[in-house]
Length: 117
Image 1 (tube, helix red, strand yellow):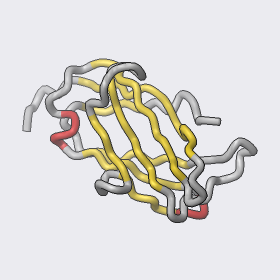
Image 2 (cartoon, one colour; image 1 turned 180 degrees about the vertical axis):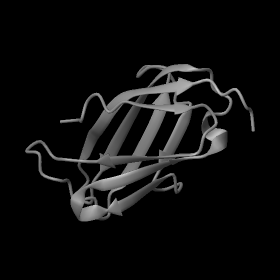
Image 3 (cartoon, one colour; image 1 turned 90 degrees about the horizontal axis):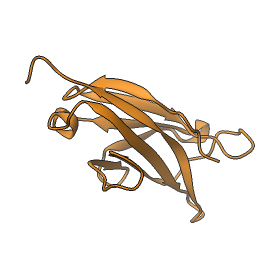
């Protein structure tokens, strides 16, 4: 079952590291050893991704596999061209046994930046 309501706020164009802890349906940390993880951000769940990060492209780092902890790395360029507003985000995990799970969903509130770098 996904962790719903994993909401966060950031300023457009800021560099950010977003931490997640992933749990199974019983509330036990999901072992992420060997897992492939993808994180995406879009206007809504039914629109194309505007930002896509994964373990394959280096945008998601598993920081403590046995504790189910990971970090999504956002660079300046990922959000600097986006409008301020509320965006949907989602994390999917493909574990080492081939099981797929939506691990987290929520809202990213993107604030406008006065100073453009």
